[in-house]
Structure formats: C-alpha cells, structure tokens
Amino acid sequence: DRRGRPVIPPTTDFSLYFVTDTALCGGVERVPHVVYEAVMGGVGVVQVRDKELGDSEFSVLAKECAKAVGRAEQDSGRPAHLFVNDRLNIAADLGLNVHVGQSDAAAKEARRVLGRDLMVGLSVSSPDEARAAVAERYADVLGIGPVWATPTKNDAGPPLGPDGVTACAAFARTVGLASVAIGGINPSTATRLAGVPVDGLCVVSAIAGAEDPRHAAAEMRRLATMTLMRG
Ligand code: TZP
Ligand code: MG
Image 1 (cartoon, rainbow, N blue to C red):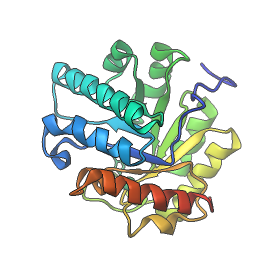
Image 2 (cartoon, rainbow, N blue to C red):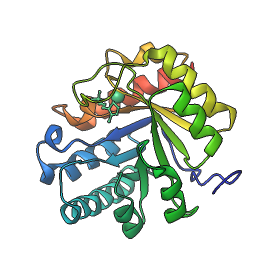
Image 3 (cartoon, rainbow, N blue to C red):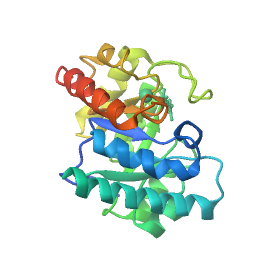
C-alpha cells in the first residue's frame, strides 16, 4: 500500500473537478470537446465516466479525452489530470488515474495494480465509509456525495448535506487525504459549501449540460475558489 507516501502530483488542483456524462455532453463524439473546453475554462481534474460503453469503445474515449486534456494543458498553460471511472484494466493500460466505488475492495486492487505512480480516487457516501477509507489508506482522493439529490445519478443514495460532507471530509483531513464534494453542485448551490473542508467541488451537469462548457467551467471555478477559501 502507500501509507505515508502520497502519490498526488504537486500540480494537482482539485478545486474544480469535472466528471463526464456522455448523454449530457451530447454524445460520445462530443465528450473530448467538452473535456477540452472544461479544462480551458479552469477545470484541473477530469474523470471520464460512462457506465454503458463496451470496454474497447470506452478505451478509445479515454484516449481521446487524454489527448483533449493534453491539448488544453498546452493551450491554457495549466496542468490538468485525468481519471478513468471504474475500469481499472483500461486505466492501467493507458497509464491513467482511476476512480472506483465501494464495491469489492476496489481501492485496494486499484492501488495494487497502479502502484504509486498513479492516483486512486474512491467514492464515499457516509462518514463510516470515509473513516474506513482513511484507515485503509489505499485512496489518494475521496469523492464525497451526494451532497444534494441530483437527477444525474438517481441511485446516488441519501443526500449528505453540507454537514454530512463536513463529517466525511474531516476524516480525510486528519491524514492529509484530498477530498472533493459531488452531487447537485451548480452555480446556485456551490456557495452553500462555504466552511466545508474539502479540496474541491466536483460537477457533472453544471459543465456537461451547459450551453458553453468553457464559460460554465470558468464561472464554477470562480465560485469554487471563493467557496473553498472558507473551507
Ligand atoms: N456521484 C454522486 S452524485 C453524482 C455522482 C457521479 C452525480 C453528480 O452530478 P451533478 O450533475 O453534478 O449533480
Ligand atoms: Mg456535483
């Protein structure tokens, strides 16, 4: 495992984290474009997530997203990092970070396969799960949520609210683990997270569903910076 050996590159900025949704992006061929625009607007971390594509199609999508992130890094002059949702073999194959859920010792397996060169993200949806993640220390970053109920993930479980997120994030803070909040975060809700000790705000629809994803990302970035200053 990686106890005491953080693998988070110093250039990682979690303050605005974008998770893709193929339908909200307007189809699989538009996802890399939205990723590019999101990074240009101020997203520092992207996760490519699609639960429906077959592995080979997903692998192509992940590669295209990696290229889009690379181009946006060049064009913006800012570093960005890419995670793959769930598909550990593809992440390993492409040399990408992975984000996993609670099932089947997924974080342990991810750490074993990726070693210490790549980041492992883990979803937690309760203070007990956050406590366990902190004790095990396989993950580098926790995705805490849902903060609020969201149409984007209807099986997301009961909303934690800002206080529930605070309880989870407090565990992460005790060992210097990064954390981001997810679920129902958009321009009208973001500032309700002021005082919550997370490192970033994670959004799907606020960027993927926007008319102008670059503009939406820039606005979310501004709100995230303002909100997290009081974290
Ligand atoms: N995990 C918990 S809530 C959620 C995920 C992937 C979806 C968040 O979507 P949105 O559109 O930012 O509310
Ligand atoms: Mg969100």
